[in-house]
Image 1 (tube, rainbow, N blue to C red):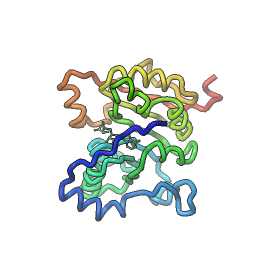
Image 2: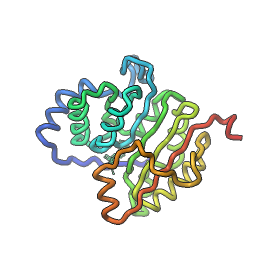
Image 3: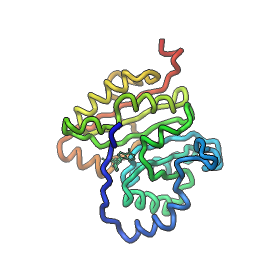
Length: 226
Ligand SMILES: C[S@@+](CC[C@H](N)C(=O)[O-])C[C@H]1O[C@@H](n2cnc3c(N)ncnc32)[C@H](O)[C@@H]1O
């Protein structure tokens, strides 16, 4: 699979830099467990609460609010953009969040090694739409990667995607509908999920006249699919 991102250096504030130095060693998560095997989420969080993984949290604006509102769910944010990671680390500290960890890794690599049927939810808020046709292969929501995502969800777990790019929404709807083990919780697009906060990114998209499309799929075991 093509890389779904281009590493941007981006400017970092002093606060973000400091947060990265001080808190990434505390809240950062390795790709592998100690023995090189799967990551043991229970060990890392110190409890057996459900795990929700977010792909590309940006600055973590939504992540921090959702985590604060749901202290009995553990959130693993995956991001490669360092200033954004610094920003979320600052929020974790300021809000005293105990249920957020960060993986500074390519989400494709991460999902390749997450244990099957081990997580409760996957969040994908405004994934890069890669609008040019020659870049479509960089889109993260496409088969066979959606098969891998589905395989990591527990029965009744969910995949929740939001996008401001109508054509990507249509393609993602088709790809997710074709993914064995996933079932649309609605017919076509989902209504806005009220628990998801509106971010600056979303407000800008709306101001620019783009419609927001939401997709919400559940994991169903193959027995239940037939
Ligand atoms: C358009 S931004 C949206 C950020 C945020 N979710 C929001 O709603 O504001 C997409 C983000 O996904 C990240 N991203 C793209 N592919 C990724 C991957 N394979 N692994 C981790 N992060 C990725 C990018 O670095 C970028 O920050």
